[in-house]
Length: 512
Image (cartoon, rainbow, N blue to C red; front, side, top):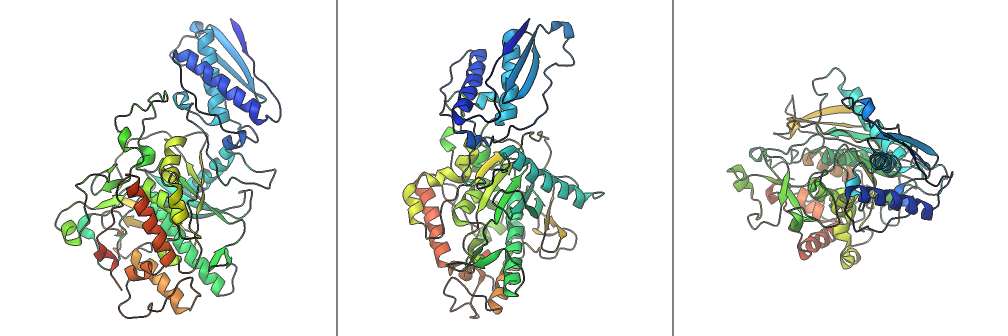
């Protein structure tokens, strides 16, 4: 039996037509499963990034174990000029599979069960260029840059494996098509509590996305030095310190959803509009990574007090905030951190690209909306700080889950010196030599003091920076607008009953 699944065609689908098609395929899936789903409002066509349909190969729907004679129906669907031919055991089954293929190809929805809540959320998508890439094309390009560089760096090496891979890419034009790779990192573990340092010489959190951000800071310092020395730089003079030149954007790639709130969902459970997850009361809360373990737990527990240096050294397990929470803070306070805020205006991510385990609703809540929902908090931030919403998108072919143990090392590469550094995640220092990593607090503070020695103009009052009793901690606190905005962020999370931000023992920041 041959059936035709007809759809509207055209070189350019307007937003209304696109919505009608998405509702049609959603309804087909709901009917197939025999239940009614409370549909969420469908976003505009631009939020799906479909200026040109993504070209993906048709997926095979015939199992090798299924006899050919069992196939009784063939569906031929045409959507946005692209043909889909799918076989099934029945007319209903074939139509259902065709709808699944269209949802995957055109909307990036790999799990139809989540279709009512799936969307590609955008904030500052490329504009002003009619040749702008679709979300899938952009995401695929970012992923390819990072993965190819990693394979180049680790070819014929014993470090050619990873569990989490991340990288930061810079674009220099408004259409986001001119790329420069800034960093490539791997890692999934945190330092052992017994290796805490009073001199800032260890890296506490060796998760890949956190290391990529630290690599970016080195890059920003190098660009400030270039500007100071009259060389080409990504910075220019702004109203309050230096700012990024027009068109400069930064994009974070992670091969999987960051740990913490963004990952608290089951990709195989049906989403019927009612959250049946037993941990629903913990959605949106701050979460911590525990020493010698994987995964995260909510920081709302009364068992979590202030961490003390002597307590951790004596055996108390060291806690680090989850990567979802740290990304949320980056989208409020910026990537540059407190020390660089002496010299430059906030630097925000323009996009976050996820390689697998992607769920738009959970990711958007984790890295942006759980703070932004409190409009008063955003107004209380010290300008130029603001709650910044990056573009969130995934690649069209997601990486497969490969269960494995966390590796005992982390790699970092950056474009500043084009060298690779391997870090022992248990000690937080260089793996083979035991030297202090270039990404440690001590190294970052060294860059800051060199900037001060060169008399680089600052945004803040720096009257006591050269006093003998000045410490890493006191210099961070003197970035007054950053420090006040950080306090607003912390208070907002607590007032919204989302838990407390658990910091390291204060002794680790008191080095000169």
